[in-house]
Image (cartoon, chains in turn cyan, purple, green):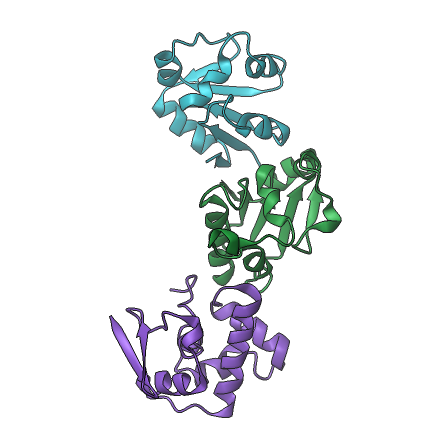
Length: 99
Length: 111
Length: 120
């Protein structure tokens, strides 16, 4: 079974991202939206942690939230719009939204 | 606001007829509440009401039907800890009605 | 067969309504006989500390409420080893049992086993 983990909190405010990464299954993916997209801010610990997982982590970012924050995405991160977000939600066996 | 007058004391009830204050409860109050439901309390009823008071003291909440059945079976045995027995005693809605008569808040996890 | 549900409770009992909401979902699900499990993780493990005094904040006693889980048929209870260790809690001093303490990779497998997950 695969899980799409949806994060929306800033990685600088709480431990959602680090906790999610700790318990991430090998078939799972993460989708960053809202302030969670700040995890891609260059030269931050959050970004370094994500960069260290290139190749092993399926990472998606909600395009408009990243654009609104003027965040440039690394090549290996896939940006998605809302229809693609919905498609991902169906493609994975379940969605775990970290409230 | 609803009220219940027992032995000269006026007690506050919530909109569903449950006691506002757990501490207002007494045997006479239980009998008065039962009367409102056209129920006459027998020793079989009292046993369950006391059990519910104990449940609330232990867990600080009113049980839904399933935990009530389980707790009754645990404390009084399977002969009494089954939904048939409890439904018969409390007009088919044991969790709600027995909690009301025992002076507990309305169980929240039951439709 | 109803879908199984894992509730991940991540907030301290005193930080707002989250811990109570997670518990209410578990109790409601249990009352309706849904197959469900509950995992305490991050600050959620603080709910498991014994002898907390809810009365000091005029709140309901979550320690007592948590004991009701098994009466509601919720017996698959888990706690995150890393989160306990971070907060200096020993698995032997917790107020809820039976409780399985899981390492990170076991939590990934746990999430995998359930049909649905709610993280609060």
